[in-house]
Every structure is written in C-alpha cells, then in structure tokens.
Length: 338
Ligand code: UFG
Image (tube, rainbow, N blue to C red; front, side):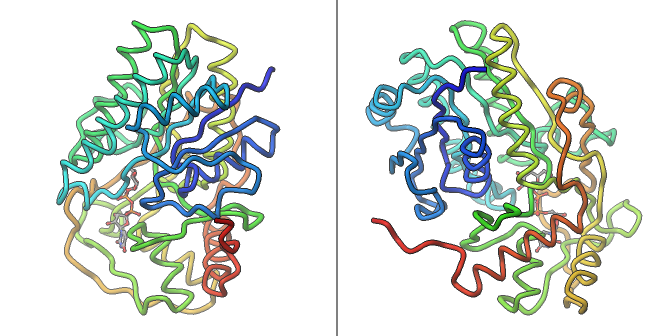
C-alpha cells in the first residue's frame, strides 16, 4: 500500500495526537494543522510539519495542501464537550459544522482524495437499543451530537458530488493514553470522567462528582463504552487504508468495544489500581447525558479487521494514570521548541 501524505487537523489535541503517532509509527508522511485553542504544540513530535491556524482559513489550507502534497485528511479539530455545547451551541455549530464546510471546500478545490472524520456516538442521542449499530436512527439530544451529524451529512452529499471518499468514525468514550507515554489528555479544564478521576487519584482534585444516580441502569449511574485512544488511533490507520483501497466506498463505523461500564464501575476500577478509595460525591444528573451508550462494533471489526490491543478498563486506567503522573511531575510535555 502506498503511503500518501496525510494532514491531521487537531493533531496537537488528544485524539489527533494519538492518530498522528499511529500514522508515524507506520511510516506515513504527515503534517498537522492546529489552532492551539485546546491543543499543545509541544506534543507534536519533532520533525512533523506544523501549521498554527484554523481549518476555516482557506488560504492557509491551500498552502498546506500544496507544500505537503496532501492527499488525505484525518479531521479531528473541533469542540468536544457535551455540557459546554448546551451552553454555547453557536460555538459548536461554528467549530464543528461551519469550519468543516470550509475544510471540505478547500479539500475539494485542491483534489484531496480521502477524508476521515471524527464523529461521535452522540449522534444517536439516547438510543432505544444497546448495543447501538450504525443503522440505529440518529437523534442527537445535544448540540454537540447535532453539529457532528450535520457534518456527516455534508460529507455524504459532497462525496457523492465530488471525487473523494470519506469515513465517519463514531467514537464512543475515548480514554486512556499512549502506552509509551508519548501523549495523553492534557486537560485544560477537564470534564471527561476518566481524566477527572485520574486527576483525583494524583491529587489535582479532591473528589469526583458522580452526575446522576437515579438512571434506569443497574447501579443508577450512566453506562458508557470506554475505548482506549490508541486502539481508536489504530482504527483510523486501517480506515485510511481501506479508503485508499476502495475509492468508491465510504465508511460509517462505530468505534467502541461493545461493553458498557457504569460511572461507579469505572471509579471502582481506579480504586483497585491505586489501592485507595477515591472520594465520590453524588450530584444531580448532568444536562444532555443519555443513560446508556454501548457500541455494536461488528462492522468495524469485520470491515477493517480491527483487533484492539488495549481492551479493558484496567489497561485504560493504568495508561491514563501513568500519563497523569507524568504530567503532575512535569515530565509529559517537552520544553517549548518555539
Ligand atoms: N461523569 C461523572 N463525573 C464527571 C464526569 C463525567 O459522573 O466528573 C459522567 C457523565 O455524567 C457521564 C459519564 O460520566 O455519565 C461519561 O461522561 P464524559 O464526560 O466522560 O463523556 P460523555 O459520555 O459526556 O461524552 C463522551 C465524548 C463525546 C462522545 C460521548 C459518547 O465527549 O464526544 O462520549 O459516549 F460523544
């Protein structure tokens, strides 16, 4: 398989930086665009061409496409926090939908052949069936999910009209960190459960809030399908290979392990790992949270022959914790190269 140059948008962010590592580890030529609104410049490995700016900047994109001879895009840049999307919907439609319109326009104008898009399980809303497969109706219950679903639709329409194919990967709950400690979640104002929990375990906060204990779930707390970020990154490389091998085909794939864990089960797993009880405080439900989200990953496994390497909450927590300790000790982020 010929390895074509790939632009990673949001490559200085959490998931984008892991996809970048997965591509580089396998010898793909890569470049990064990131506006550093939430990303960290220093997390991008030395030697990777880095462009600071937004994906709505058409001139910058054209320059990158030409300079780097970009033929494929992995698109991670965007806003990702469900509760924030309820407070600031316009930001989410601008950052996730409108900005992606600009990116697709520039890609089409410059003849980019493949686009992989980071979509989300939030497009399903509160699904009637779990595990959820890709045929489940899409009925987002928050602006975050809606903003991503609009982009999926835009990609489908554009791929039918212009000469590129695309993959939309619907992520369930992405967590963990690079097993070799090269990247992880940096967390300027973390909100994601496992990140918050490992911050509590390393003393950055004194407890974890549990948002809602009266859901119709086995222990009353929300159930999610936590997927290790490096397994997800591997799925991206496989998906890109598939898009190249099958240029007439598009991909729509759930990315999860097909196993649900409650908030309390996640916290219990952390307690076991650190051998102490992390303090938890029961709080009211958080707006926009569906009770249960679990992926059917049959299509992902069958289409891409994806086989996860880090499947299991204990591994996820161990790697998240390892990264959090590194951050706390100031060893995670290399000194500025600016
Ligand atoms: N939670 C807590 N306490 C916290 C943080 C979270 O109880 O301090 C709970 C939430 O209420 C929820 C669960 O833990 O029930 C998971 O919440 P996260 O904030 O970690 O993740 P979300 O499920 O809200 O969202 C994430 C991604 C989305 C994706 C979604 C799919 O951010 O992109 O998973 O399940 F769509």
